[in-house]
Length: 83
Length: 258
Image (cartoon, rainbow over the protein chains, first blue to last red):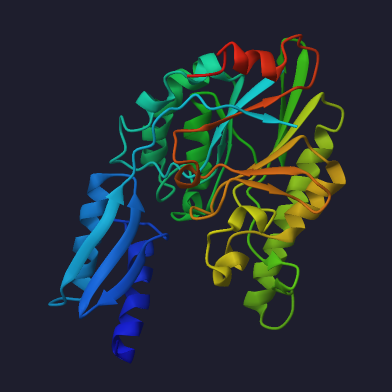
């Protein structure tokens, strides 16, 4: 990975946190043979699509693999007794 | 016996309508109160709070519901409007404040404060150097001070719960990158908890952390960030107070189960 790619990772993570289309601080970016790969989870399909829009604006022409998932948390009946 | 449902980091936006409410359907049967540990919204906009208010309306009608704000809720500088929108559906946001509810004759005090980062012993910031660094650490100390004030108000209650957004302990950060611990919590909060020894301390914020921890003096800490829970909310049972049903009985009979 080039130095330039290292900084691009940082800037993309920053943009994903700040951009209103995503606003997610917990996404991680790596570069795999020239392709930027974003991983993590967001709350809605709109925010998942936002990942691609933000990356396209920031890194035009760079290939992107969006591995971000949309979380869906079921209601479970587990109870923890606090001692 | 007191049953507490809790979750943090729901990050509700205008695109979240209908995504939370279906997963809270059974909460009123399973819990006596509901606590939300900050990052209520995505950007801290009143219109996002309107969506959240609708998602929480039925639950808040059924059980007392309290929240603290998280860092996301400050993004737009309109956090007071967020608080007011939620108050409209009886979701009370606490910051340096406490509320007491009675459950079958047992008083439950909830002390709320957002908290802040700063770090943990051996890897903590100091109020030293540039004004920006001093301001960061001063905010951390002030945030802990607000938790202290809130806990002092519920000293005499049968059950006492501390509700924060930031973590008081490294235990519940396990899974996060070590480098970001100072942005995830502060030991100032744990010091306050140890001084008051509440029955339970809840926080969110650390999405890649872990559920269970303790402060140095043994206060029970739970990270209820939704991505950590992997479920809609956690439910805790505390064998305290005057009720005649024990947690063990309730869980055995399925009263609090699925």
